[in-house]
Length: 188
Image 1: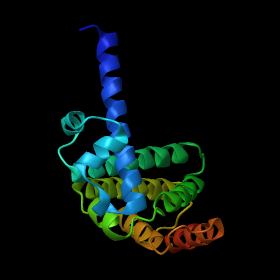
Image 2: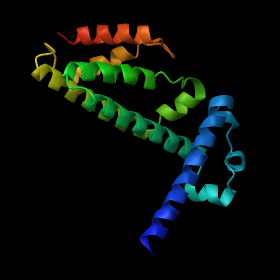
Image 3: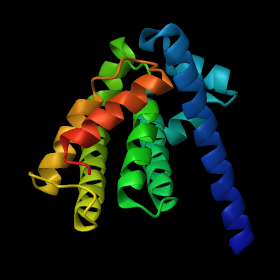
């Protein structure tokens, strides 16, 4: 099979899967997880049920794939934010501000329970903790953080403290919390 044909088929499959995931997330957000059925998802995504089942075996798998895609995009975004700053401390501050807005999604209730019980969430959290620890270590090595804790301990503290934000926080609230968190890990 020519490469162009293969790329086109893969792009089509990816676009169909994206449409299914997006429509499923939209229904779940507006009506709740209880409103999701494979028949309804197929109808509203504009695909046949056979096509739907070729991509996903059930609603839970669709939601998990959507959530994993969202988390992956957030992690890529955080890395991009980090890379735009020369100062390790400013990079950490910018990453924490961005993280605050990413994590401010209102996944309460049944949707949040379904999404956060998935194995990919634990893996993503471990990746995020390692990412933050690396940034803390870099800032510490640059003399911008006088860390009394190991980078891993500081990262756990940072992520726990960031949970203090309410859903949909204001920019000033995020800035205040991030300033307190950075002060808490010894930012100079």
